[in-house]
Picture 1: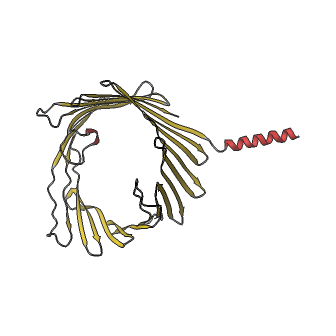
Picture 2: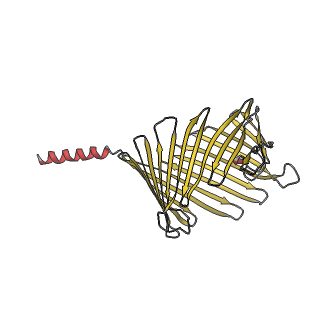
Length: 370
């Protein structure tokens, strides 16, 4: 009889443990960068391991470079009743030092979403409390209450003095949605603003205006910000500089004018047989597409397709010297590819040639996911 009871207890415990739905997942990314001209080899490796049990995720992240283990992070994410809890603890193992601890909590009750974030740095601390209504009606409101001011790495002292409160409300008014904000800090009232976005102008489909009215204890300003969208023309795309608006603060001349726009870039894109060709010349100060980097002119071929074992990605781009007297003086070549070798393994390679500095960087990337 005792043996039967022990066996029954073991079965119950086994079924109970299985019901927790435990799971171990992770990702390991290792990159070798080879410079054959020196020659040198540098390594960067990131390992993320997540243990899931029930509604909780426990994550450990390790970062390794050529100098050794340089980053350690422990994270927790889960639910406790109606609460959602998060925590992240970061260390610098090279300096044998604590870097940062962040704790967050959130709960929904009576159509209001409450959340709080506590952040601790060495000799510095901050607490931010946020409340947002969830009634789904025409009015949205968010209140953000802040205690403590973070000034890493020097710190501002471990105190939670009142730092400020921001109240934001969005509500419909006639034909537009108005966003109103009011801000206070330790000195008292800062400002109140009323903003409207996307004001359409009759007969001008490509131009919209944003308006922002700001009140302080001593001033009142109105700022108009135009937005231009001409769209794409065939396979060509023109890039336009932002149209200048204006501000009325009681001293500026009236009325507000809308300045002229400038063409700051010309691009072309065409896909042939699954291969995308892109050419871009961009001479503007801001708004440059990220793939162009520090250069003003470049051409790129790229493709994404099914390979022998999984998805295959490939790209090669050439860039030209912006300071050269000749129009097509080659400055750099960047190439990259990656392919899924197996369900849990991805292999990639990068090649960066800087012809102006006469440098080569060859990278090998191994990604394991489980």
